[in-house]
Image 1 (cartoon, rainbow, N blue to C red):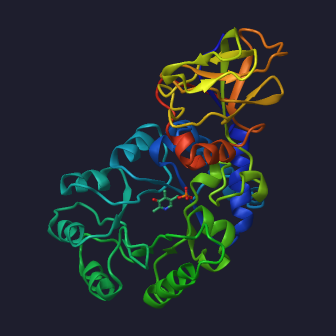
Image 2 (cartoon, helix red, strand yellow):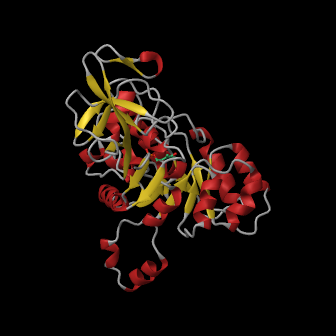
Image 3 (tube, helix red, strand yellow):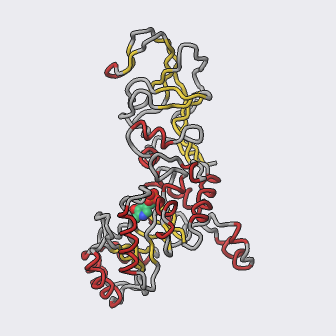
Length: 378
Ligand SMILES: *Cc1c(COP(=O)(O)O)cnc(C)c1O
């Protein structure tokens, strides 16, 4: 009998990459694999999307193959230097970008050594690059704050940063440009138009690559695609847009989170279950105990009624999620057996729906699965 196990469907991943390519036919696609590929496993996911050496050779001979093999990523984006090293040590040779740049100047020589590209979003990073002794120039993406006000150089500072980066011997030319949306998942929020316009105004004429769109930009904002897009969550088949599920955009969920019933128990009307007696039976019923808890990444904040899939139907979460288990109300007439499979989210129960009950987003559920969960690749 299996405990919490995430089945990872690499065909679905490739399918989703093809969907993203169809939405963004004129842009390079940088696959975002930060945070352990949103919980899906950093290296196996990158390998599934990476062009293999023999493929590269084959394709240069026979160009039309590229058309049929468009599930490859043009590069990979990560949030941490350590994530990039895992990719390089695992044999990934594609371009890799540190989306938040380097956190310490000490790693600059290693960025050259491992051929890692970096975002520059602060004066501190710019000065560190200017002062460094590097054997080769570094590929740099200047990050501009076009309105999200999280990371990025202020618009009025952009000319100075461009000028200094262009003058710097440690920087490979041309430099590239990146910005990030704050509200691209809202179809009609004018801030997104303003961000696109400001980005175009500031760097539209520049030679280097320009990149603005993450997943919601890819799916909803054609004007935001520029030279390169940076999808994360869509590759995993999850909707970046509230109130929608991946299937609404033709995406397939990559992760199916499964576990098993480890007990089926009869509970009498009026009895309460688990910590804090949070759920009380209003009739005699059967309770299923599932080997999945917050120790596996299932949020303790999940309320009674959160949907769980057991033997072809949805049953409600009943009672507080504990570290290793959660409980569901199977109903008085249930025939479920110990050992039966339970699906916490996946094809039959979209993670977006589960997330909505819990008051979070699909991103957080898939990313938060813990190291105790087995990842099985299909
Ligand atoms: C995480 C991230 C992305 C991917 O975002 P999704 O919404 O998952 O597509 C793209 N760009 C940057 C800078 C990011 O940090």
